[in-house]
Image (tube, rainbow, N blue to C red; front, side):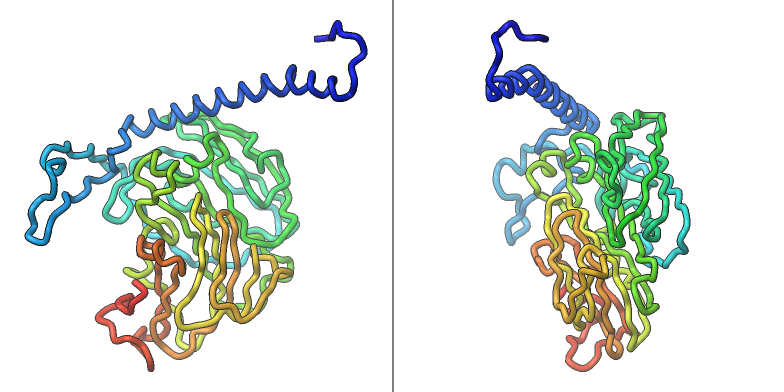
Length: 373
């Protein structure tokens, strides 16, 4: 509204703008955030802070007796029924030719069995992470996002490879609706995509993320097998997401899946691995035991190359491309060298050749029994 005041100084005019325009917007933003958090809690089934996704074993002493009166009186947490079991995630990825690309994402909200536990998850295309996408620098990329009709929340997707408002997240899709947007891939690299609906922390923490690989026009270099690995956290409750208390850690969505089903490579071979840290809150220190990274590309851009690396620090939403040699045959575990997180499931295994321990290895009854599991 126009002011009845006499001519204002520049400082007073700025303060008037701050109060008349920015203050109301701030209040609206806070109210929207509060409402969104309330919706999140409701969609998680109204579980209290003490309600875990899966019942925890009662504490016991060395004689197997329950410890403390609370163990006798505490009610068992509600147990979720899984809608389906998370499928194994194939890490193999291959180069694509240049040209327009169309990627289709469907957002769903489900109870999913991951390993031995059941989590309430919000997901893209029924997998966590979402599908690995590939394009070439200069490609026009069209993204179609559909939100399942039985969803309770709106969903969206933000592509870090784009220059769009909110990375495309301005296209908020209500349950039962669809949206679309287009952008051009300007830079090579390994880019995160994720839901950009408030509260973003919860949408990522519950599984809505994935990897887009944008190849340089000339490719990443010499041809060799390529693998895509995304590190992330799994949380039992909304409060655990807020407090950054992960229930488990995973490479490609399932804790320890590549220990139980190792990635097999030929003896005396090379591999290129695209690594993304989706977080949403923990850092990564990616390391492969028994080899050295001959070349590492920060954020996947060949202009960011370093050589002879032992471990790569990756911030949340950051990435790298690493190339390495597997010398001889044997076991080559890959971990985050932040071992408190590796112990929660962020560990896997490359098996070269027959996978039997080579000179200097610790004899093992099975892959992974070598001190890094």
